[in-house]
Image 1 (cartoon, one colour):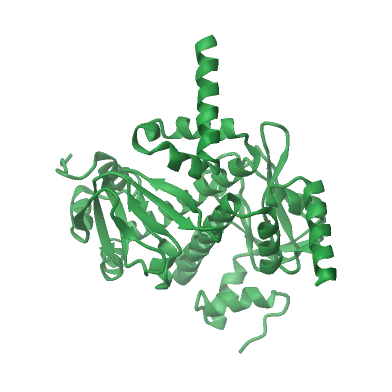
Image 2 (cartoon, helix red, strand yellow):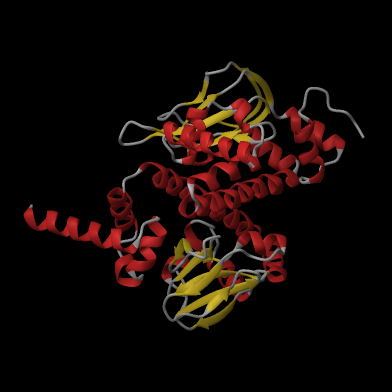
Length: 202
Length: 202
């Protein structure tokens, strides 16, 4: 098996085992993408702009948020290595986005514009299927998150997040995690203290 | 233009204008589906079962919910005419569903099993693209709903729902609408009274 230098192993793994691409097809696929560095705090998209690229995260992480009618930032999701990040709706419909997408660390991405994406779909139809399955997977995850938002206690939401992304506390400031969970930062701090005390006692 | 008897006009419209099928292709597409009546309160899926069909609503409406760890029903969404309903994740992965899907009215659906769906995709590739775009659209809607769950006041959530589905109050009991909005039924009743008084005053 070929070793792909500079491409995150999880990306290679998913192209190999989920998209079922051969090593040659992986090389061809990646040739349609452009590698770019994004400095921490830089935006790859701002509300009002049209998203012109699909972006695959090779290194680093991003947050997607919107600013609601009360001028409050609402975090929709985070993106880590191997994930797509962007506003697909804006990308597909060529309409201004409602989201901001910002790098939370110095990051590196593979980006592809619409024209190249269509060429890639044509050249490697398996990649078209893969792309559709990824959207489905995001959708399934979103449905579960919605159910959790509606039914779980703040403690359950927090613990489930840690369970799903053990790395998140090291990489994302608490303030943003609170927003993602739909809590005030102070409530999350109190919750963490309570959990910590529980742990000490047990 | 051909008139398709017994198929909801919105379904024909979306096959014609979104999937870009010709009238012959619409007839061929529909021949892969089976028409079925579902009595009010009947379930088309229960948690623990594997979803074996994709279902297109021709008439009536459905609710999808799960039962959370506190034994509480959590409504994920409603489905009306022209919408797909089901648990796509269970259908795709052949895994037991976590959802219940129940008819809220005497309903009529077009259902298709996995084998026929694959035959249909092969016979009419435009339908495969259409199917993928539908999942995308659901995903976009879900993202917006999530943002609303996180940021809006109960009043904003309720008004936005009415704005989006003006028919909902006539078709879905308030108890379920409250669950969908993540509120207690009593809170929704109080909210509606308050809004009603506001209207009278203005």
